[in-house]
Length: 96
Image (cartoon, rainbow, N blue to C red; front, side):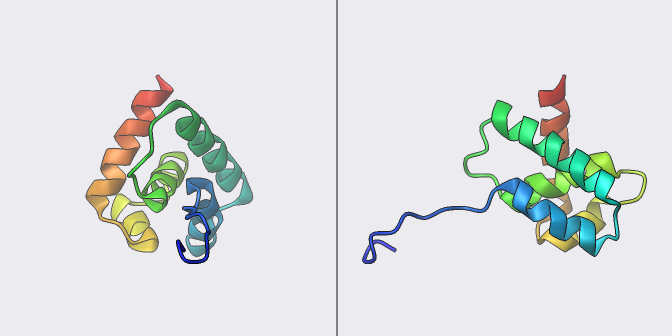
């Protein structure tokens, strides 16, 4: 990237949400609510160094928590269930 004079861009957490929802057969309404929740969290929090997929997974989990497990979401996004649990707690705290 340096040789080509290109900047490195990480994927935003919200870009992972459609994939998670599709994989878990969740309704569009859940996807939209999860995007909104994650956008709020990102705008109000420091996310540098945090895995965007973990943030997205936590957002989807919070919105569809009756239908999903932390382990299931973690497996879909490729993080540990502990990462999902920590991000869930962070999102909950930032929403207060």
